[in-house]
Length: 414
Image (cartoon, rainbow, N blue to C red; front, side, top):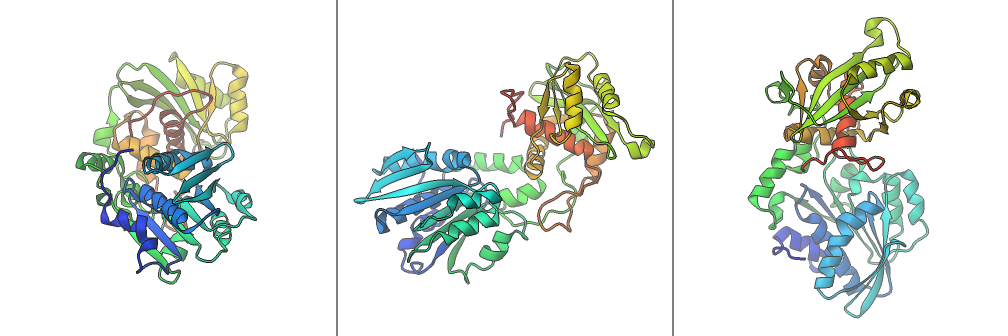
């Protein structure tokens, strides 16, 4: 693997454990912007420290999921280690690596900390050190169980993350208390990564907006407040005519007491247009509709368009069953990670990958009303004016960025 020389901050993340000034520290925390080079320098430093100081010892490398650890951390790390003369034996089906260097051999176990149940996977081990990548995305129970496994003398803890909400437990308990915890805290920006050109930096700056620009580009632990999609601009995103499209998808957020919102999307030259919509608010209309009545609305929305599939809120079991019973439309259960979906929608708006016909009044109205809940401890939008917003999020997360049942409609350029 080829890369540029390390920046001063990357060198410190890599070599802090050998620096007399920091040798008594128990941990290192690296946070900040995306693509700032913190992951590679920290993971390389973690392995070098382990190989220099230990023999026949066990370590853990943890991420949000096993897949993300192997893809985002292990693969690039192995390429660098092997170029440097390390011998790496991979046992990925068993989720560990054996690494030999400096006449020492150690074992590195791989763990995913995606939910509360993950803590049980790491119980009972004795570790000499742990690297927690994307630590802010892991449940506290898993992180604390991993730290509890590091019970030997001179064990060290390595944390890496992008910023989240400033009320996040990791920010409150570790970053704000770094000195108390005997932890070296390093904050990274894109300027700390010499391998990034100015062109690439500017592309990333164009990609994110609002809350996610503050976190992923500026590297700030910023509270979520204001409208969710400040990058939405009627002059840019609303059109009066729709070009001839090649593919058609319908997205649906289903409600009984709450509104049901469906959008018909068409793709032309890499841009998806919301051509028209179905929006039924039982409170406003004074009467609830049955699944069959909403299905009639779905058929009217589809018209004569060759709709490839209908993406539906995964919790709408009865409506999914109703659609399947009629055997006309293929149903895909939507990806439903709210915060990740909001970020992806923001990206597509910034890149002008989705646009809206001016007849779609309900989604245009909700863009101005859909706000963050500033009273929430974590990131959460208010549960109001969010029905067209949700059906749009299902469409973007599942079709533009996602994969379901081997179906991919389009990959958005990131």
